[in-house]
Image (cartoon, rainbow, N blue to C red; front, side):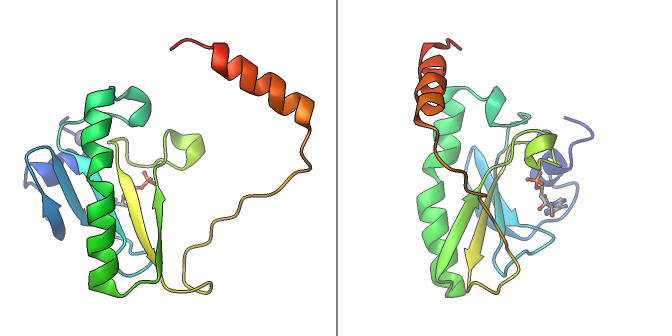
Length: 138
Ligand code: AMP
Ligand code: ZN
């Protein structure tokens, strides 16, 4: 895709600090390091996000995650890692070429904050929503 920044990185038109590459995938350091070693893993072939991927291309992308995560952990000495994938603007996607963030964690006071606000469980609502999702064909 011509005006996609990650396609330009794949094509070598703009530089990136590469940490892993194979036939289908590229991983490079995020230009804005939320924590040291913050890495993006992308498919080389342009696709908007996971919502538009088929099972084969998604498998190729995600099967590389565990080894890459361990590699980054070992190289940085991080204590843990958040693996994040944003799909569409409402979910925080700003670059519309699928990517997985691997963000090493060094402690509760490092620069990454993720919060899940908790709610009292409503078991009837949970059951009916689960049923609805189960019955939905894609
Ligand atoms: P997201 O918000 O999930 O779409 O994440 C996009 C990420 O791409 C952000 O964390 C940006 O810092 C990162 N990014 C944007 N441009 C570049 C670039 N040229 N090289 C490396 N990372 C980039
Ligand atoms: Zn692209």
